[in-house]
Length: 100
Image (cartoon, rainbow, N blue to C red; front, side, top):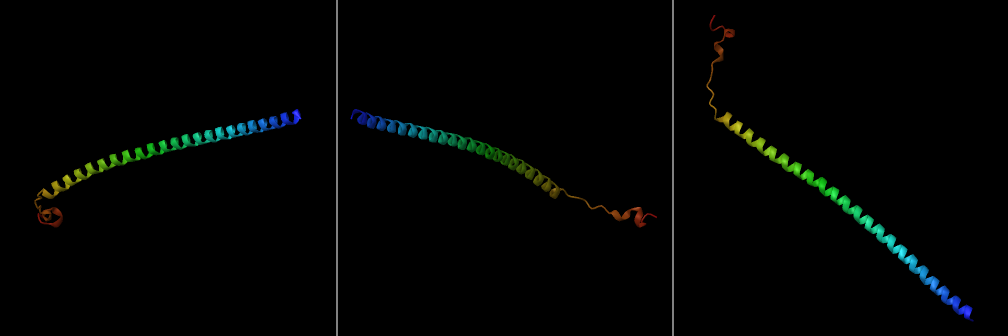
């Protein structure tokens, strides 16, 4: 009788210990995978943010350069429009026989 009681208690204790160990193992592995995946996702997001930040900075720089170039070309255009050109008679050359 003591054997059957001891065996039942032992089996129950063994089963509980086994379940506890399996549960602990699964939880620790799941958490490790979740933490690993989370850190991987954070690393990927950091790389993506850095990449798009660089693109944004390059775009702002290019926009600034284009604005300066546009202002320079507008100034040149205004200078050419304001410049008064005198008419020169080009028909008096030797090709047209005016001096011969």
